[in-house]
Image (cartoon, rainbow, N blue to C red; front, side, top):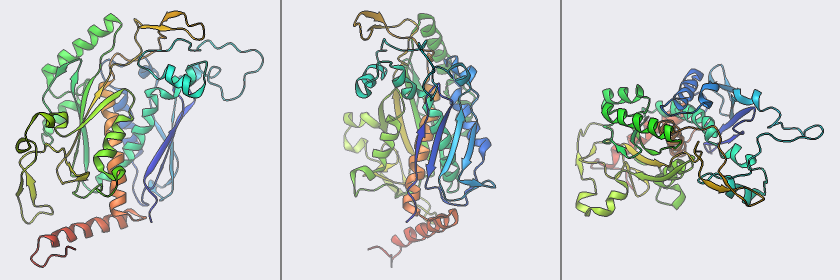
Length: 402
């Protein structure tokens, strides 16, 4: 049995580095490190980003699991250096301080909307910097690096993952057309990752106005996975359902407060005749001849991919750190004080969409490994071809169903 594709990350926002370990990759996958760095740069971009992005220039260093450019089938480890570490070596030192040490960056006033207070209660930290250093979205750089590798695996099977912003500060635009290459080119050239140029201009204005007020804004982004085969996920167990896993992965991104798949919550307002996607026959000679006249299901039915594009929408709350802080309480005195102010963004929705791509890429790569197994990429591709041959038999007169 092949090792399950999975990953973990480690590292603090102002520590020396971020680390990720990715297990379960098949042997023989060529890993282009420059493409990992490209994805890291995409995550750092976006109108409304804060000063930290001017300090960091993220690069991934693979330290194990790859030889001469190809995966070995063993755990892949990578690191991303925190350039800001030089300013935090004493504050974030691993070893105990010598003599008397007075932290200059201790956090005693929790921020509404952040993990500061809840994390202090959970772990027993008096200095809430011990909470925010790991709760920080800086950790998502490691996820993006992992997702970039998973994306390269998916491309072996002609699966592409895309994202765009559809709402910032209540300024909305229409959902993306998955097959419109010109639209996606506009998204990649937009600093708010919006393919509607007029809406993008209003989004920038809303971000600028929030910055002037010392405030922050949130929004929504959509992720599309095109070329996903039918049959990923399962109805057998609740945690094996593909939409369950997609929703959990996106909700794990800091500041995400809701996830929708396909039509999402709008299904509650419509009759079944306007929700469910009619099935028709397209090209009978194609691998998957079934086509839909709509994709309200967002590419999943019963927790299994149905051959249509996967469509996931996420809502991100405004960043909790405000330069005009909200009221809070100082601990342990319990005296009212303005909340702690940490260097932060005004809007991180465009960056969050890139993180969302990474998480969807991981979930789909994990599901592909479960479906097609194999210790090597060659084995996995052979199982992929065998799967399509089996599907063809299902709608033949002497089909091979059970």
